[in-house]
Image 1 (cartoon, rainbow, N blue to C red):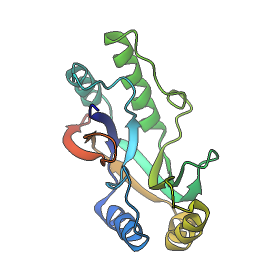
Image 2: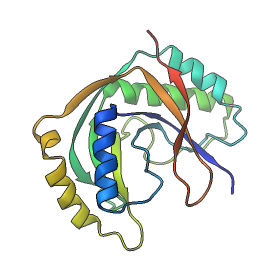
Image 3: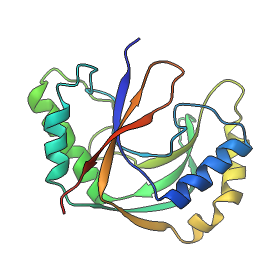
Image 4: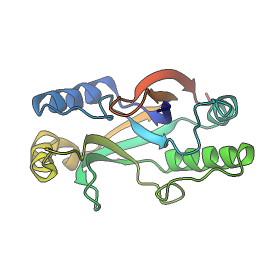
Length: 181
C-alpha cells in the first residue's frame, strides 16, 4: 500500500512531551504517535507528490497560526480521544490548501469533515481493538485538567509535512514549511 501524507501544526515541545508521556503510560500505539494538529488531511495528497510545490507556496503566503489547545474530548462518532484545538487562522489555511489542491487536481475528493467546519484537534488516542476510549477519556481529563481550565496558547510559525509509510505505520515529520513572516 502507498504511503499517505498530511500537513500539520506541531504543538510546543512541552505539550508534545506531556502527550508522549500519557501515551506511554497507557501503552498507546497508533498512527497519532507524533503529536500534531492536522491542517490538511491525507485526501488529495497523492504519493506522486505533484502537489507539494503549490501547497508550500500557499503556506509561505499565509500568516502564522495562533492556536489554543484546551481540554480532552471524545469525538461524537467514538473514533478518538483528543485535545480540543482552536484557531480560525488554521481553518483559513486549511481552506486555502483545499482551494489550491482543487485547482491542480479537479477530480480530488476531500473527506466529509474537511472544509469550513473543520474541527481542529490534537489526537491523544485513536480507536482500535482492545482500546477503551471512555476510560482513556477519564484519564486524559485528569492528566490535562489544566488545559480545560486554561487553554495553552501558542503560535505555529510553520507547518509540517508528515508521512505514514502504510497501514500500521505512524505519521512522522518529513519536512517543515515556513509560514509568512
